[in-house]
Image (cartoon, rainbow, N blue to C red):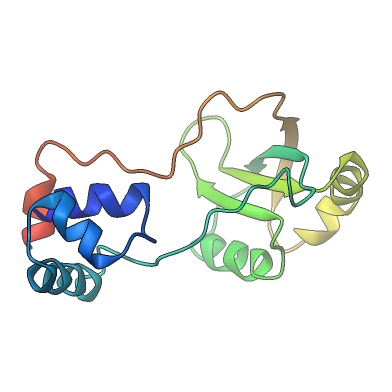
Length: 159
């Protein structure tokens, strides 16, 4: 039942409790208790509005690939500190393979993107960067905010 609730909330968390509980076959009280338990367990982290980036004037999505000169055990902390003041970076991942970090960034236009590139090494001066590159998204083929809720996930929800 929890997975059904999570699936419905992932699609639309703004629906009222009555509609949600009806759609999963529970009473409103039972559904409410389950949602609160999932929130307390940290499984539901937040309820957010997904905004239309195009309507807000954000036209450029870029990926930055960063290769470090050397690694250090505080590199995550340093990166988090820098990125805290850069809302244009939407996601940042520490990776295995050829590059150490990949960052996803959103910009209003090509000028904003270019300005960011010109400031890149100065912005990340506390990170030992060997090389970096960036690529622009031409078209989004698929974008999802929904996690796959199947298989053995019930054990995680029950924990």
